[in-house]
Image (cartoon, rainbow, N blue to C red; front, side, top):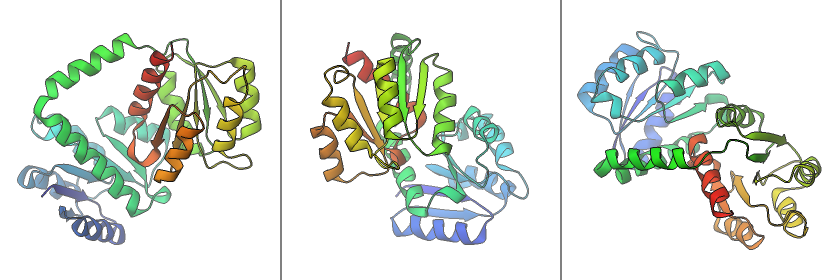
Length: 271
């Protein structure tokens, strides 16, 4: 049974997360004080931590900084669950090694469960060969650069846009953003990008229709498209593939770094 430590002082949210995780078969423990939470990390030995930022005792950043100094605790994946969605806060948390960042006002507990399952699965897959996996990742990143590549991102979620724009800035790619279909098609026709990242639920023209138009236009149909959506039903995935999408990613189960890895792979395969 996988162990989840929740360090959260919001009484309602903490109790909801605790009950949902227990119902899913996890051994979950809730601590409402930061100092007690850090001590519990050592005694409980969790497989994953859900961590608030604003806490009594020690705040979330202090916990993360102390965790990174301990070689045993540093290996435990952390998902931040915070009221703050400011870019400076997210960047600070990511720099301290957190695996994901959720803003309380923008998610429901079910999304947390999806994130937890995804991180637990990753941990199981990588625990036997962490060093070789890190070597493979480093080799892959060094051999696949996005520098100079044109990427069109079609997405109307401003919070996600801000995160992705910052991530892409570090890759030195040429980044274009559109929040609705007609603008996206104009940019694609004008810029002839190396890849298109396409949300499905958009105001006006939806992603499936945008994809259909791309693949029916001889000028741009060769451009690879990755669908990225909250929709994850088999029928949606099959529809996307039938319309010509290279891949279908579900937002709740991928991190920005994984999205970039997927983009690199698809661009390399399309050469």
